[in-house]
Length: 150
Image 1: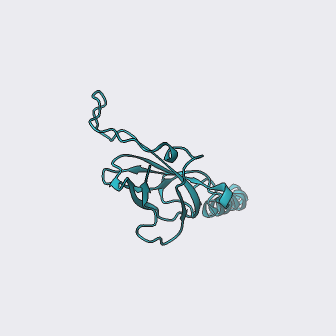
Image 2 (image 1 turned 180 degrees about the horizontal axis):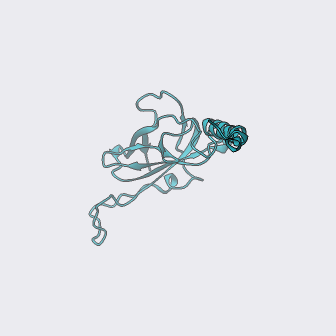
Image 3 (image 1 turned 90 degrees about the vertical axis):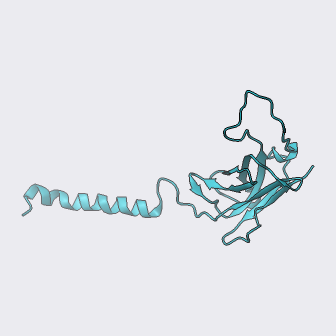
């Protein structure tokens, strides 16, 4: 049986719990954007790029209002998958894309590399890249493949 004090707090406590539940359902606090799957393969002059980072930056000129960039690590086979705010995918919309080379995990950085991969500078800079893609739901298998040229 409830005591008078418990009855007095029942309404305010229930209201707080209901408000908290509604905020959680509404996505207050982050992670509420819809994400579409984005994965592809990056080639340099027709050969898979074996390491690096690909960054999709929302194109504000094409009305993409996504909160931030989506980033993917490039594997040894040239494949990448984008991550946005810790989750797989990217919000739908248009993006400008940059690619930068990185040292592969486990590489001995104390010795000079036997093969130096040089990505053309235009792809490393948001102001000069000509790589653009529209992220959509249900993309074709090769929609996000990128071939870097001189």
